Image (cartoon, rainbow, N blue to C red; front, side, top):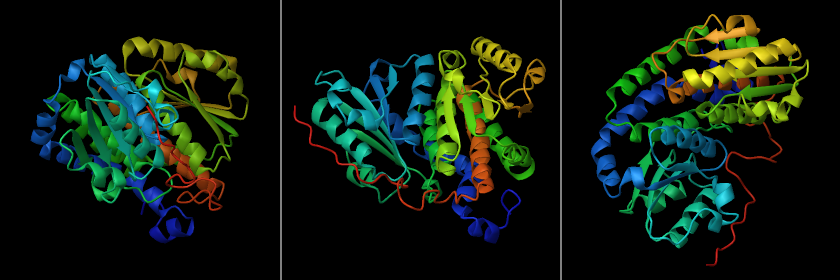
Amino acid sequence: MIFGLNQQDLKTMGSIYTAQEIFQQPKVWAEIIELVTKEEKKIKAFLKLFNLKKTKIIFTGSGSSEFAGVILADYLKLQGYHAVSNAATDIVSNPAVYFNNSEEPIILISFARSGNSPESIGAITMAEQIVPNLFQIIITCNREGQLYQKNQNNKKTLSLLLPPATNDQSFAMTSSFTSMLLTAFLIFNQDDSSLKIELNDLITKTEEFLTQNYRQIVALATVPAERVVFLGTNILKGFAQEASLKLLELTNGKIVSTFNTALGFRHGPKAIITPKTTVLFFLSQDKYTRQYDFDLLKELFHDNIAGEIIVFDSIIDEEIMPYCNKYLPWPLQTSNDVISGLQAIVWAQIYALFIALRFEITPDNPCPTGQINRVVKGVKIYPWKK
């Protein structure tokens, strides 16, 4: 049984892969920790090829893979790294905006579930063409993908192939997204034993939630809404972005979903709020940032327009309770928003799955007519000329 449904029910609803891949995440995260530990010497030897703190780090990918980079770039800036996130879809449209032929080294970190996206392959090809001193880290879920096959023996490239289960067979990225994100997070925290304790707590608590407490999220999905807004600030912005995409994908656009930050939302996007709008707020564990989250939460509550305000939190904060319709705290032993965000995105995935099922949409393939596909089709990458 997964989320109270047996395998035959899930197959009939066209959701067997999506449900399994959401449900398997704690198990897969444990495998990722084991993988990075096993590859520790290889990873450290690669990172010694350059001065990591003084080298520009560019995260890239398309769709959900891009959002993993958005999250990690913000996180690494807080740790003193020069990190940015540039979508592969942006890079290929004009690589000169993002790369130059300076001798300064660049580390390009590519996330790819299939490793066959034309933009991901194109971004790497253009980087190799333009950047003289290029190092790469490729994190992918598919052994047969072009990215892994092409780069596994390149001495200036660290290729990390994730466990087969991470290569999601469903349309939308779920365990592939969190697993690639976690892998890169661990690469930059190999010697932090306290973070590994926090991650083990995350795994235990998420497993408990998926098996015993998931009904809280299933109940939220029964609340009628035409629009859903996901809010998260700084590191949690990327998680809100990914949550918004998941809902849009799995419902095949039936629900209008968007995302923003606590401060950015007031600058126009707040106009989306109607009585048929649900707001889901991922609260930051950073005490300073949380003040801004709390201010917007109170404002939305007092506006009394949104149909439902739901708060996901990784601590129990009694101050929050009066200002939302549903407060869902699931305490973790962490103040790190990357870790709390991993918990929040699992909740958002369950929410999107059950809204899709409510509309009788098949989450494993929400668009059977083929306008959108698991691996993007119809993209022509034009040769770049210096």
